[in-house]
Amino acid sequence: MNPDYSLNPHVLARYLQKEPKNFTKEDIIRYVRENDIEMINFRYPGADGRLKTLNFIINSIEHLDNILTCGERVDGSSLFPYIEAGSSDLYVLPRYRTAFLNPFSQIPAVDILCSFYTKDGKPLEMSPEYTMRKAHEALRQVTGMEYEVMGELEYYVVTEVESYFDIPDQRGYHESMPFCKGQELRELAMKYIASTGGLIKYGHSEVGNFTLDCQSYEQNEIEFLPTRMEDAADQLMIAKWILRTLAHEYGVDLTFAPKITVGKAGSGLHIHTRLSKDGKNAMVENGKLTDNALKAIAGYLDLAPSLTAFGNTNPTSYLRLVPHQEAPTNICWGDRNRSVLVRVPLGWTSGATYMMRDANPLERVEEHDYSNKQTVEFRCPDGSADVYLLIAGLAVAARHGFEMKNALQYARERYVDVNIFDDANKAIADRLSHLPTSCHESALCLEQQRTVYEEYGVFAPALIDGLIASLRKFNDADLREQLKNEDISVEELVEKYYYCG
Image (tube, rainbow, N blue to C red; front, side, top):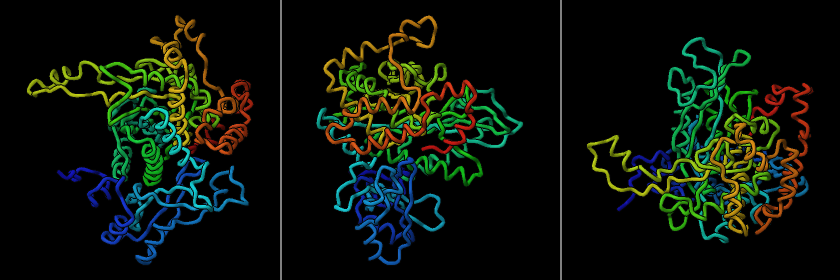
């Protein structure tokens, strides 16, 4: 029986009647010819975490074939500060499975994400995308399992203050229009993201809402479905580009900045993870977490200090990681608890069939396997993250957990089932280690734990060196003291890193 693509929102997949992973060069050429496409856009991430663009106007089938076959040259030193100008020429080659119809371009265009290659035709060892591929392969080698990921993309929409349909400060969670002013933008963004291949779970308004300097700040979130880690990173990159471009078209501002002002909810980039084998979730069995899950959790906790080097990459990141803001500071894990670093959310492990029957008495309800809904969430990253390196780092951490001799005991000792910010639980909090409080401290942690990332050739040493140097350049070791003494203001920091990631 052939798959039904009638409801598939991915424009090319629906037209070509095949999954993106099976796209070929001939498929792209056929789509271009039969749909009057005039432009090809190559897309690839730079060290700043944003998608870059190289435009091609198609002038013949031969020209199109050449573009898709040979790729093009780019200046690597302008994209990555740790590449020397004397050896900076790189190739970018399109990955056909990532092709999508550009939802914005007035000139009909197909965009394709690219990989970087050296003058010898080898993958660029320090490329974020290739680093992620190597991380997945090393994890497979050690565990025999696949790594699946989904992201929660939080952002603020910034508009002029309106004097009607206001909602109380920090009470925006799951609001609807007309109280949620950013709903229309969010819904159109979800449609565009899905049309490019993004697997979306849902979208909603988030807790954060406030006014500042006659501007209204409203927090929203788009959450994705678990998929292969490489695809998850690509989808997040494209989603951020779509959200920013839509905001520009709407005449509003939009930011993924970790923190806008003190005392208000910051924007995270929570990453849900799942190990699978033979298509089944290997992290849960009979409604309980498996040893596989505990080993991965142990790895996340052990490498948490250095994972901030990929997921919390500017000084404002550490203004978000403070107590009482649903952001973690202590290195621990728990069930449902939003004050922990690693959270195991509700996973439909009990009562799901009863709920369905209770809500729908006329339905004949059959038993269903809900195990694939269970994930393990890593909660400290934010919008400044390099999504490729962050997901690569998490895959390294999961693998590391399987190689730790005491992983199960390590995880069990760091489980908490209370609010660790409550004074009554101070003794529990005091025995836990803490996340870094600055980019400077994050760099020190990466330096101390770098060998784990460099094992199996996953993270190139030059890449680690470059990341450490970048973090140290912020000179924020005493940032909190400077803020306390008013040597620098939160507003100055936010403005400087407003469009991070």
